[in-house]
Length: 122
Image (cartoon, rainbow, N blue to C red):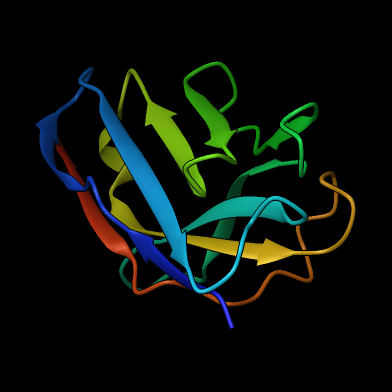
């Protein structure tokens, strides 16, 4: 069974950047669609971005389009979320997850990691 571990979170000022890795152990990620989600205090978990098994297709929430980039390195069994031009409203716990299915469908993800906190101050 695959285990996902997110890292790279921290506190940054608005306009700053962070890169979040999601590393997998126990099983290869190379056959899965991978996604990033986030949950802010008092809010529902929301979709952020997804990437197909070979990195050929990506899909983003409108709120992060043009600022965030999802990528993957199947040789390292790791998925990344590069976050630029961060805003205070990006503050949340960020999670990665996997599924078998289309990248443009934000449902069906599972095997959630423990999350990593991102805090953006104004």
